[in-house]
Image 1 (tube, rainbow, N blue to C red):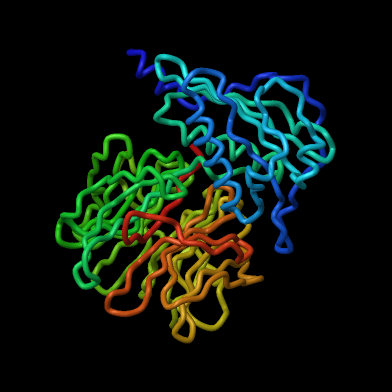
Image 2: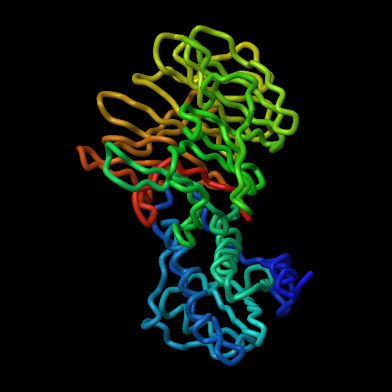
Length: 441
């Protein structure tokens, strides 16, 4: 194993270190509820350079951490020109009075070292300014300079978790369909990016239409639908080497809308056999399939709950497109959507408490959420065309596709907080659709 391979293998391993004798965790905390409207002010000076040439990395790291936190809508960055003092040593005592004077409630202090072989070491602490205490103990991350953004995301995840009490979602990736060309002749290929749109890589070419990519629970594989054979067939792609293969369904019927089970070893999908579309289960190792539904209706878009015991899906068995839940092994299904309009593309939250969906009503499309029994329905967005929600790993944010109206309409990715706040566009190199949010890395 080469030195480079060893470094890549160990990339981003978190080393918990006692950087100082830390006081017990202070009470600084954002309680995330629908009533949270005032962002918490924080300061993050450029990370201190502890080796020659590390100054640029210190500035980059601090900026990504700040962008991650402010992007949630829960935090507000205090501009550097308001700082009274600027840290010059990671070991120096914090001058709490200087940070209180500019109303910083949280302070993030970091330091960075760059070795001659390109190894980057990042360490940080988080402070509750008004109680004069450190939140937890410092952490250290180490990796190559090529992975500096991941280390910044890991710092932001740790800060977010300590202040909110919830898991972060910044060190995660999204697979999506990148689109080029006019609306009536779009070229589509699979792409993958960091959650914030950085580091885009293309996984397939645009020689055939691809649809609905779905990450595996471990983030190493992607299921998707391809028209490479002339009609829809499900493929599975290895993210590391971008090799893909067709999943043989023992039939020439159209197969589509695949999704991994939480165990990563099985998948559910829809199969169209003549006038009928039903949901099937496949063992990804043996290729064995089993029918889960058997009705004259169109039944598709299956999604597992977190423990793999139930599946939510869409069906028009009642005469219109609605949401149903059935046992993971098939059997009786119960309807959970009863509002006006049509419901589709349901996705179970990683927390297990909510189901996100697309709703069409009175000529408008919405992204919404409801409890798993169908209660407490809330619509988070409204536009000409919003569809295809996908959950952040912590169940706090939903990403989806929004398409503008007209012949030149273009699809883009947007995200919104589960409360309906902080709606924003996710930057991509061009038109984009069908996002699937992967796990924390």
